[in-house]
Structures are given as structure tokens and as C-alpha cells.
Image (cartoon, rainbow, N blue to C red; front, side, top):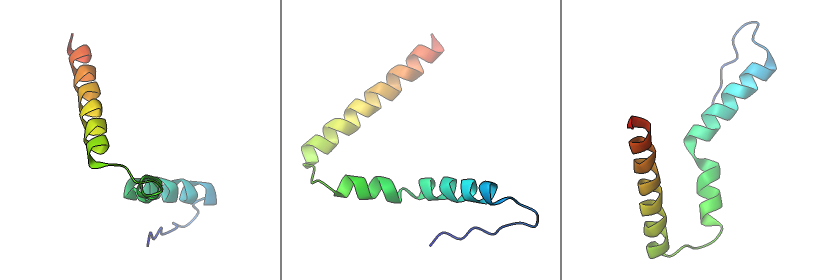
Length: 64
């Protein structure tokens, strides 16, 4: 359960924004979407490798 303490004089919009940020960090929504359809382990691994290559290329381009 996510608990957000609202400070004195804090607007509801700011508190809601903090809640959304905390909720996003927990990864609940991402987990829910990933469980909607079964994905084989080989496909999951392939996706992870593709992502790792993408991140590595980004770092290489940033240093060049």
C-alpha cells in the first residue's frame, strides 16, 4: 500500500503528482501488463538482450 502524507498547505495536485511518481516506481502497472499475456522465456531473454544492446549503443554514442 502506498501512503502519501499531505503536508500543510500542499495542493492536492502536488500530492497526486507525488503519488503517481511513487506508484510508477513500484512497477505494479508494468507487472500487470506483462502478466496479461504469457511470454516464452526465450522471447523474454531476446528482448532483454536487445534492450542491453540499445543501452550500450546509447552510451557509446554519448562518449563519441
